[in-house]
Image 1 (cartoon, rainbow, N blue to C red):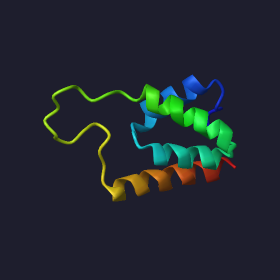
Image 2: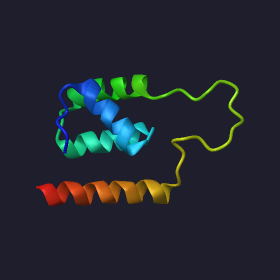
Image 3: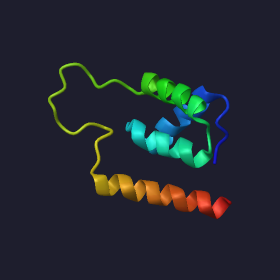
Image 4: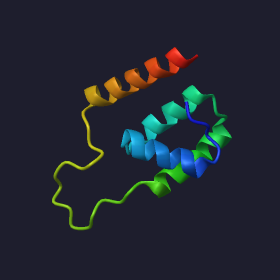
Length: 87
């Protein structure tokens, strides 16, 4: 429910609060906010730039952003419920 302006703050808060590095999930959030595609593309570019990069020489173990599809859908459902409650 946070305002999407300024975009840098919105993206940083999203990464900090949801810790989801999946651009598709971020785009779903932007869709739910009702942003135009042109606004979404610039926000997605910013999102990709602001994601923390994995340390070099990673051992291929689970990353900070890895999750199962069930966990992701659960997070999205929780977020959708929060948004519906506020509308």
